[in-house]
Image (cartoon, rainbow, N blue to C red):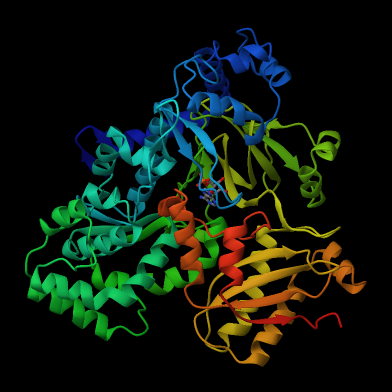
Length: 585
Ligand code: AMP
């Protein structure tokens, strides 16, 4: 039996989910009706000649597929305070800033209560399924969550990251209580203006409540890995704070000091227990279950660009299961992970058919990707989008969303594969971001291709007991012809021969025919490996955080364009050594 807690029933959530997914086609039609009806006054829809029609056919024939670029001026007018119904019938209440790691700067995205509502629905749905597999009692969660800076737009709307907009909402805490995931740390820690001080306090509060913690969580897995890498450096200081009952002087923000100090009492016994457990660990393997003995699992998004952190996360999690969290974006949620027992590598996301209207552009071959990078060609060759219930198992699609927050037929930029169906709604696997990141002429490489190449190099380095801490790439056109540059930050010093073979290995690991052909005829110069000083990726992360990004949504940029001058400068000024591939000599 699932536990029932004050008004929240996991059984009921599952029942509702089953009903929605059994009749996904009807629910999708009704959802589109609702979106178009609620927003029939919106200037955007009026201008497209929809004139109040709310059927899928009129919608598809009048409303074009768009990217963020086409909506920028509308969103800017909302941010500037134009109160006219521009994209939505009801006014937009705040602006979300997307993580911006892909484009180099955050995008403005409309946010409203409907998005809070669907966020809670997703949280509750995946929790209900998780709780069947790993039931929780009332307790707490060690949540590495962080707000971002907030500012007012010209029109007086609050602009901040989508996660911060959710944490600010009234429903957030209530839902966290319902799903036994209340954060150990006080709000002052979550809403701190300084990420480093927040992280230290999250760790400290987690240790203070170590017996009560049942979940270790962050939105994206990278934050958990980052938290425990930090823990390796600060654990003695944390023990000291607990022993003395006095907060470290590194916490300087008065509100955080006051809030955390209220939780801290001298507790030499707890400090000694933590100290002894840490000393007894080998290379920090299993630190999470050692220090949080009642934790049932580690939870966060572990798919897509988070996969490279899985090894390290497994190392810290030891015997605890890793559970990949749901699929969504600042623009809106898509699906929940309802198979918590599957390893993150196999995770899929079951689309909730009532939280948006979803369409899918079939992608038959990788060549389609190239065409979609060129607007002209994509208009000529692209296949028609199909509906949620029309997708086929095993096929890949670009996902298009229509939301309750003013986005209509919006290209999210993600590629998904249909892993199967739950009732009549598909289960999607995240495959990659759609855009090509490495391309010089006829070569086409995505973020996923880069990840596979890095995995090959990782094998060579693992044999030397070295770890790739993080990586990124760049297309360097300053040579003629241009070449790929791969930046690696390693856990230790590697021998020159190892790095040199690592460079060749990376070059050979890009197996795309366009790349191989171009390398053979020297239409692309040899790949360059640049090895970075320790801490370079922290500097890059700090740079994004100062731009207004939030650690909760941070994703390492996997390719840095020439236009992203500051990040490129951080990378280039931290290069220890560089190597050119001899693979095609
Ligand atoms: P943001 O700009 O921070 O809103 O990030 C949204 C993007 O993060 C999505 O478009 C995806 O590319 C990625 N993302 C979100 N959830 C997942 C997931 N469960 N698995 C893989 N990638 C995800």
